[in-house]
Length: 329
Ligand SMILES: Nc1ncnc2c1ncn2[C@@H]1O[C@H](COP(=O)(O)OP(=O)(O)OP(=O)(O)O)[C@@H](O)[C@H]1O
Ligand SMILES: [Mg+2]
Image (cartoon, rainbow, N blue to C red; front, side, top):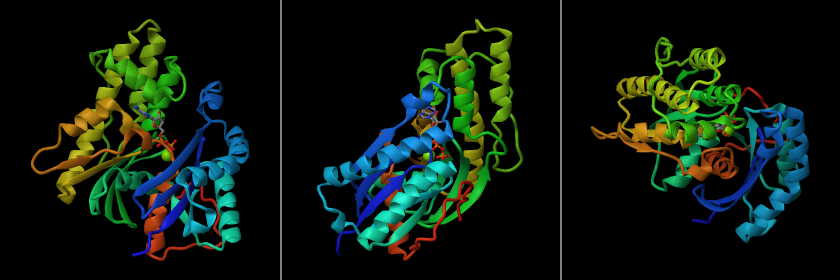
């Protein structure tokens, strides 16, 4: 069978990334230009600044991705672009650039849902992983338990009613003075602390979550006592959030009888959460965790998801628009 080369473009938030992936699973290049140092001084992503920086970066990042992959533009079979969910201005930069490339190269355009991209990270990490499986999607904007029935068939079993898990990490970190992005900083600090602070855990019906209560509880504790031990606070926060997550994951396993659990999204880089998931590997359950370098936004995951759309004939035309609140399915 002929090899298929997909050029992926990701610009939904504050990473401008372009990647070349062969046959959906082999990353030939994955150039990521992160704007984190720019947004850090504002304590979070400023949408207008993100869009402007994507414009400055996209062309350079694309040329570098082609060069690093050691291929030519003519070798590409299709251009895969994130078209949602995300910041509309940021999405439009990558999508418009992708449309222009697709038009100029006379190659198909494939629109990719960013969440499908996060899931596809695991196809790159585990060459033999195939659906069906249960995916625990934990990112800055989403927290969902998804029954991945096939490469392009999804059923969302549960989702957050309020804050995404990554958003809770980021807000807690900001209030206790750790800065942006908060997830990795809480992760590091928590390693030095002990989970000795009792925190309220919100119980939601079914397989849904709620993380805003625990976030507020931490913020209140810190406001009451600014000298409170931050290491223990972070360790307690991580332990409570993970407990809430695990309770629903176990219920989803019981409900679906799935034996494969796949993690996805930036928060799946968290060392405590990874350890807790390793602990549930019994009774035939196997847990798949994405390569740490691929947990947060990158274009290799978009190219991989784009490959599966492409081979299934899911091609878009140049009228494709950005959809900031795009859902799975
Ligand atoms: N080690 C870590 N521990 C906890 N959280 C982490 C860690 N590393 C990254 N994160 C969190 O992951 C999030 C970023 O992940 P990701 O790039 O998947 O989200 P996003 O692209 O902003 O949102 P979405 O994918 O839902 O659009 C941030 O909230 C960040 O704090
Ligand atoms: Mg993301």
